[in-house]
Length: 81
Image 1: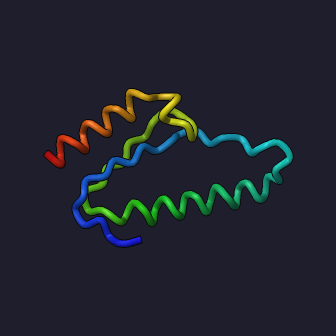
Image 2: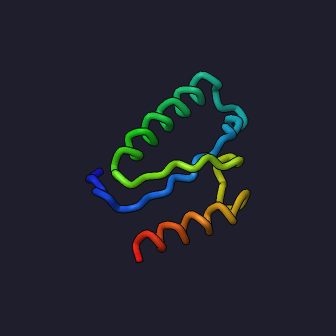
Image 3: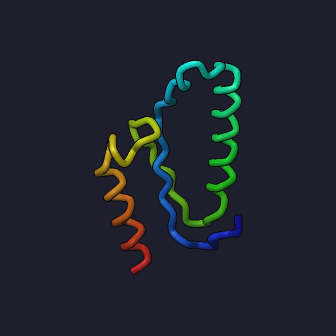
């Protein structure tokens, strides 16, 4: 991915790790989670104006905490205005 420069980005970061899908080997699941974390760290370096916000959800933050999503979108729009 290319750099986003100073484009404002808010990263909503789930604080709960979901359980592996039924029948999915735990070792592979842990490898997947490690890879996911590494990829997220790389993406967070793409913007010099990134703010990470922990949310008390699992992966589906838009369903579990829609107010956090709405607030983040509004904040980014305000920064772009």
